[in-house]
Image 1 (cartoon, rainbow, N blue to C red):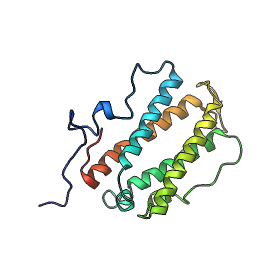
Image 2: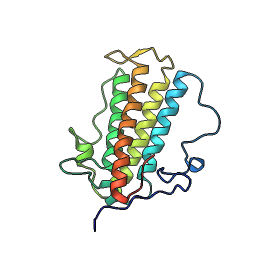
Image 3: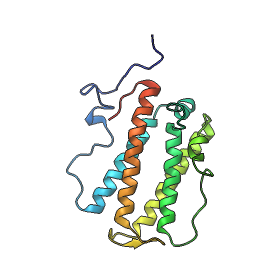
Image 4: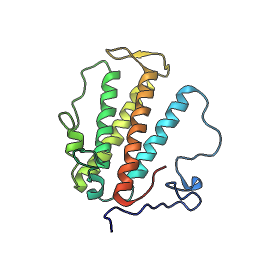
Length: 186
């Protein structure tokens, strides 16, 4: 007997997937978007939805459950981390003084991810707010070749970095969710 959850899925057509393609909110009718910026935005939106899906239906204890010692990684920690990272990217874009860290010193986003409903609600609100603010800051620069901020980062590089960060952490979220309740990733 094991304390590990049995693998499960809501998909009926493809049992190794999170959801059937016709019920997956990331799937859209039609062709992929035209243009580089629209494609980057589409990929980022898909990864953001994936993270939300990985967290759906879990209580604060499950969201705050750590992966394996000594790691402090949890789904709630990932949400908090991505809110912090969105703020960091905006700090790279905007020329004024950077906004302070949301959760404190290094790794406080993970270490402070405790099983409390108020922290869960706050983390998701922080993430939505920081995403919207960074989206708005980047919208001021439709030229992907433009250089922004004190370091002269390219707008294209910032978009790709955001996608990479979400993609990597969605992979972590797949494993964390499967460990929590057996639900498989997609």
